[in-house]
Image 1 (cartoon, helix red, strand yellow):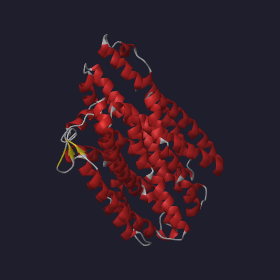
Image 2 (cartoon, rainbow, N blue to C red):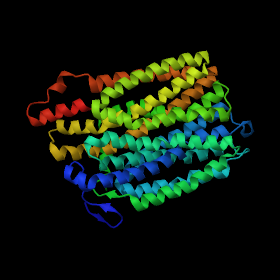
Image 3 (cartoon, rainbow, N blue to C red):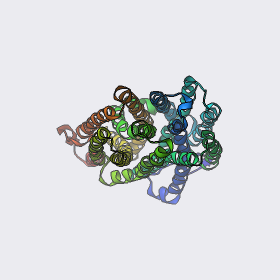
Image 4 (cartoon, rainbow, N blue to C red):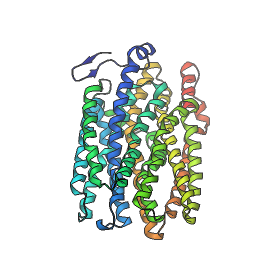
Length: 452
């Protein structure tokens, strides 16, 4: 391993166990730690408006439908920018782009600090909310970058930890908001806390992270990944896991205040619990997938999510707050497990396809790593759109019936689709799949398919 000016590493071979034990693991984990820090702040800024709307009482003149629309716009931008953020790692380098993307978080935070007061027009809030969406892009670039640092055997754990540590930014900002609301502070206090934290994340990324030359300038990987059907199949599954997590994170507090009559402070006492547990459990989803196979964990996780959602329909109809909160928190936990297991599936899918094409050994590993890293950003972008759908579904449900019951019925149908897709594509064994030929390469292909 050799670093040159600007912290570039020219040689990187994590699949080589000697290299990994002597120098690779230490370097990879250092980059993982500071990647998590930057992504964590990015998630906090992205979900900033899920907290700010709790501060926006009647004096702001916004209806519940306005607030759901505002959070939908923020979620949409966060999903869309994940596509260029995926390319950015290959263009600029993982460390360099982490510095840039972390620094850019100052723009929406400072803008919100300026406009956050009664009398500001709804269109202005929408515009500033659009800016906050860039925080969602940090996830795509971070996952693409960290994927390149770790060997295939540890990707489930590493990617789960990277994503989970970033996702913790959601409950952390909600906890900070809870403390500020409880102390009768205003939204600008919250924003003032995050401005220096953004600067710290950017500086530490500049000082402590590295770029990999093996990733630099491979912008064609994203194009190749976009042409692969599995990228879009996994996108559907990620809508069900991460889309649920981010959508519910934005909507939970608003549902509590609108449907169950909780005050902003009462809602804030509850909203952080689900995102916190869902974030912390994400690495466990990756670990379980490492051990039992990502597709198996993902399938049963969707079954559990569907069951929880059916209970939520009952809790919503009965307006049982205790049952509603308990099951909603359980749904957050399941979405976190699913986040970890689905991202474990991606590297193995592309490695399996490389083996099926006749590639072997290091050539198959490099091919799979190249496409899976690019696919993660695209899958993450589509998954973020699930959060948009959740907020729009809640908006329409409250406009139509004054409750979220209709939205939960729609979510139940979506989880049923995810169950069917997971089983039919990755667990059902068609005759053609077993016919991979004979010899060591064919046996390695079958073994890799079994691990998906």
